[in-house]
Length: 89
Image (tube, rainbow, N blue to C red; front, side, top):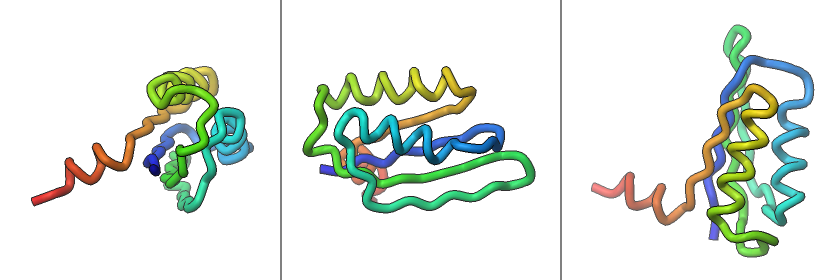
């Protein structure tokens, strides 16, 4: 199973490191990542394998949101099944 992780916030040193470290703490493996800085706005999309999470998926989502708030970032985690369902015609 995979999850789509989006990160938005004011650009600062270490955002990618903070988010990827948080993913690793919970056993999420990042398999793809793209990021861009638009003026002073940082945006990132990650795809992570979540089969080996050390916590329930819902707890992972809550913890990533919490870690984002602590860093002044908006982090959103969506399970691939939900993502796929939202984008079917």
